[in-house]
Length: 255
Ligand code: GLP
Image (cartoon, rainbow, N blue to C red):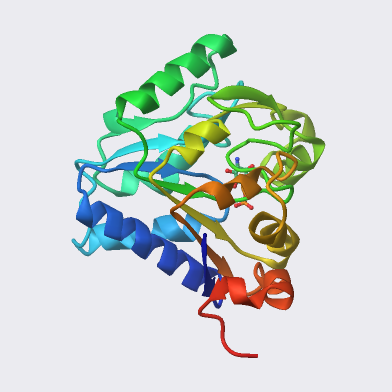
């Protein structure tokens, strides 16, 4: 696991976008594993700029998203399908037919999870998987659990995650309680993983993820077992790690 220092959110976003851009340039028909949340917004802005400048061509890329809320239609402005279209896809030249996201409206969880696993497998796997991290260490929507879930599955969101998501919904009762998410095995099958984190509230979990034991109660800790993981985090998100294990962080200014 390499942990790269960024001064702030903007620098984190530029560094992450540069790593994704390198993948797109080196393999124009690559499979991008994409994420939602506030963390990747700046990264997507930088990728859009790269496309607008003529530096990046997404026409041969495919995309597979991590997760989707159950019960939300694609045109619901809180669905992850809507998020991806509004914040990335509509601004670049990716073919929408090559974008994949679980279908939150499919009430048959078993069928939907099977379909999504098959769709990702048909792409030949993910070349670079972008991840954010939840305060409790969740990746995608793999919540803390007693064991690591493998393939795409339906999860009951924890109260902490529901609370964190409430800010995006008009009414508390509108916040979905379940989601479909790629499993840990699917995420770990990506050739490269790029996790981004920003802000002091992520600092304790970044420390646990990188320096703590590998346990399903901190789902992101499993990333320590992958051989090509890059974390790009800003100074605030790295603050605990910099205090307790500064040798794990590359590029931080000397104290
Ligand atoms: C949601 C998403 C995750 C994301 C997390 C953190 O739970 N399913 O993929 O990493 O939120 O979001 P943020 O980046 O807004 O802190």
